[in-house]
Image 1 (cartoon, rainbow, N blue to C red):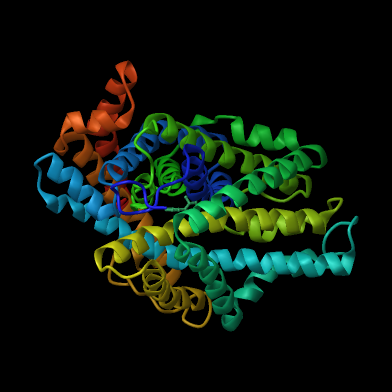
Image 2 (tube, rainbow, N blue to C red):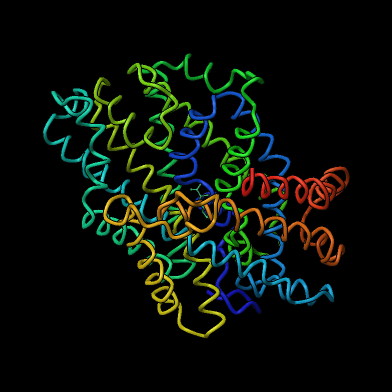
Length: 466
Ligand code: PHE
């Protein structure tokens, strides 16, 4: 149903908005990237600095994004334009959101590639469940190297990679094409609670059957000698990705929020839930991995290679493995839906296409890039699309998109958002939207005006040239 005067659908309730935004935030970033990054960057020091980044940089930027959306009540560039117009500022600021929309499109294309791997592992565990039965460990009688080889095996099969990628994208498109109430909100309202149930179950399982105390010690023992510049940079980047910031996604979702929603409170809930899930993901994965005597610092292979090996020695291994990847699938889908919604809302409002047609246009674009990303692990592994830029000289197609969005688009988008909200937009307009007062309001303003833009500029420069 279109909300009065906005010309578009709104969330049916504050809870729906929170579930959708938490759904956007909680995704592969929490389940796959966070534990891998924490493991590669020495555990506790990374975790502590990550929390610090969420509070001091992530949360203020998140509030800035949703408030722009809520004031503008339109797709992200149009929302920025309206805030600028109401502030008597240049409408050219909308470029910050246009860049964001483009970045969301780029991220969508490779996010669905990884979404495809998740689907592959669901298939692996389903077939294993039939082979090894319910109660024993997973992959009975198979060598660890065999299980580890599943991922490279998949990478070597271009047809399957492309098929899984496009399948995941198609499911995402299906829900976005259906609109807010019966699509995006529907996935969030049904899948997020299911996600939380599965997630709690697996964390408790890990705590009882795995090496929980070592995992806690690993994640929460702060060894400050490990806090290098590189670790800090990884932590900020991860915080941004995990909170879905800098790419217009949260602006787009903010536009569907009702006037009476307190945005500061809601942003706090979103950031809190996202961070809690990241921490718990560590507490779910590391006990299982440590119990199997495996290393924490293997990077991206942690979830796709180490964890399946670890399930081999666990009671009900195939079943838990299956539940785990189904849960990750739910989390990934609610995120990919938000990545597709940002560009779709733009195309559909700007060019007056119907929503399904807009979804199809954006989805087809993402499919083309996705095929190139899917093939960049084997068939076109030597292709270096950004070979002329030193920082990205070695990156294949997938890594180039990942690098450009994380190192360029996200920080630049966030810096411009902070400058726009903190310095350019009318202070009264911003204050009417943000739901803050007293000390919190003062603190937020200082963070948005000074701390965030300066910190983000340092991050941008070090990320590019450091
Ligand atoms: N936050 C999502 C995750 O953690 C990814 C994402 C980034 C979604 C940017 C939307 C926008 O997986």
